[in-house]
Length: 332
Figure (cartoon, helix red, strand yellow):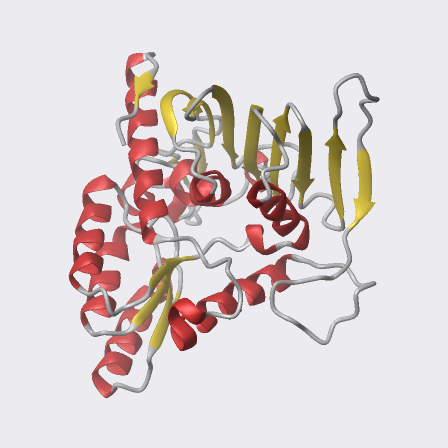
């Protein structure tokens, strides 16, 4: 595992180089600031070690393309991105409903990931508030793949995007008695259009570091002509659904989802699934794929580097939309 904020990166960088040289590991989990992704991820992949990296897989589109080129050149190496929230049982239930084609014609999709700690203006500045280390994407680079993981897995690639990006807190304490400018976007709302074979639908994606009252809320809502459903980590045991038959009653049903994870645990079904559980499930999926390849025990795997690349293309278009005030077309 290679993980660290800026003060510990130099030590982590030395540690991971030693591990690769010794050949003491087969796989690496690497979590470092975005500006170091290209250098370190590329070294890991070239060494032949399987990689579970952190999003967004490069500080910008150019860095992501450099990483992807090395991935393409080493097909024997399994490379995946961290994105744990879809491993919640409620999210997995929605995945199953999509696979079953329960929704009919999609009316609308909304997905988001919201924090609130940055509402505090006395919170000291960190690397995520600096373009040099976080990238120009701001909150999109930090939170966006979490939001896009399931929509992209379902094949819902936006054909256009109109972005509304916000800088709310302009400066923060620098930890030295002064202040430092906050350079990156705090909140992002992306209004997208998704086209399918015989229809299109709007998809609203939101990534917020300043969402009052939300400590760490990830959610997805899907509305369809035959079925609708939603899940939020704000109520991690509950999933809501609305089956609809023409002329029938429209009523939401909310049920408690038992502790039913993709990978079996010793935890009883009456217990509540939480954030740490989702991380363990994500790691289990990565280890399963490293050990068993296409014969992995479960079918839902971690976020793909191709999905990370798609997120880069969308976020780059979102930046253009913010600069121009226009809706930007996406050509996949």
